[in-house]
Figure 1 (tube, rainbow, N blue to C red):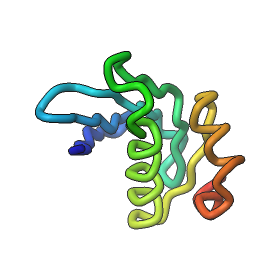
Figure 2 (figure 1 turned 90 degrees about the vertical axis):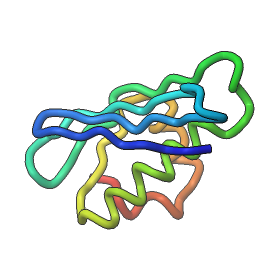
Figure 3 (figure 1 turned 60 degrees about the vertical axis):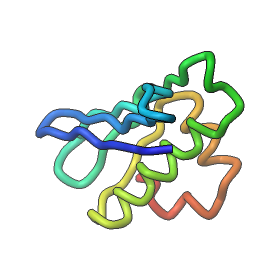
Figure 4 (figure 1 turned 180 degrees about the vertical axis):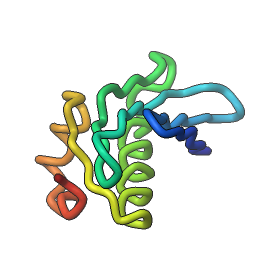
Length: 93
């Protein structure tokens, strides 16, 4: 699985690709300079159950840690995963 990031001043997205095909995405919107809101996670039906969403969330957490940013998970999937995986909670706003 390959994860690519697109980012600009207002928002961004992490996209997952499996064998070169779009498998899912996690989008975010900047909320100031030091935090961003995860507002959507989508996984293509053909890739359900393959860990696409969790791989996307791990990429987001890695980005937040590296860039010293905080995360506000408004997306239901991201919110649930942050509650379940306490080891990721250091990046929560």
